[in-house]
Amino acid sequence: MARWEPDAQDRLLRAALDLFAEQGYDDTTVIEIARRAGLTKSTFFRHFRDKREVLFGGQDLLNGLLAEGIANAPGTATPLDAVEAALDAVATVFTPARRDYAPALVAAIANNSELRERDALKRTGFAETMTAALRRRGVSDRPASVAAWLGVLAFGAAYSRWADPANHQGFGELARQALHELRTTIAELR
Amino acid sequence: MARWEPDAQDRLLRAALDLFAEQGYDDTTVIEIARRAGLTKSTFFRHFRDKREVLFGGQDLLNGLLAEGIANAPGTATPLDAVEAALDAVATVFTPARRDYAPALVAAIANNSELRERDALKRTGFAETMTAALRRRGVSDRPASVAAWLGVLAFGAAYSRWADPANHQGFGELARQALHELRTTIAELR
Image (cartoon, rainbow over all chains, first blue to last red; front, side):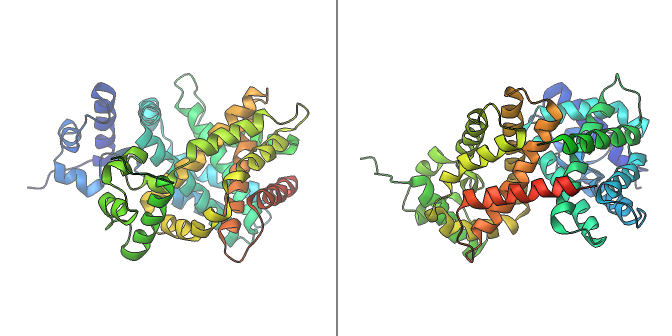
């Protein structure tokens, strides 16, 4: 009989974070993660290619929302307004439940070069997604790319603040604030 | 008797690029690369941890030059002037001999997700290096980070143009030009 799997991805992520914190990323196996989550190895592999990917689930969703946010921004929106709309569009993903394990996720990635590398690729993917979405609005290549990378920097700053247990603002608010700060920064940059 | 190894790293890189183009990255082994370069497997491992790293040699050198360029920029230099100095400082690395295999290197990375990932990490490393070097000049965190990422974008644009066989400008000139274009872009970005 097939096992009922409510939020299998989420359970695997939490199990992985617990194990990485307890015994380190390198010493943790897929089987241990699945067992800790109360799931089988084959369930694990239905959701993730390897143990590294457990920490990077939901990326397609995020990229889709970023692109959608930019596509749906008003016709009058400037490139940076459209990027703000993209960051607003992903805010729904950053729920209080996710925030609970965000500090563990941040720590796991910071402690391992393989995971930092994967994280760098994730951010590059966000930049490429936003650049392409801006291009589809008729923004030319260079401003599209710069606006997209400012969006990535805003995303990163907002995520760090959001993951900090001392901070209680929502992701959307933090992202808008971070982008606003970056807009001020580029206006002053010489 | 120890084998004389003039430019072992360079020979391994050229051998790897040939093999990746001929038979693909996934189907090429370290032993084949070493053999093609006329070297032994143990020589390979004295220079690189694995076959992926062959394409990313010289990164410590580049990071060192970027940091040095920023540190040695005149006291009156703005953050973006200092980034320009960093790009100037790395230009010496981009010799005509390197340019010969640059198109093969660009193609190898573009065709493989593992290599694109490693490349994303390399660029993130450049941004971190330049951010830290700007911070040491007293530039505050946000402008340091934005200026550094603009430097990475300029680096990427300059490298693409430099690797194009149709283009005969030097890397330093291309990098200055790319950074200048980005400065114009951010001044106009809304």
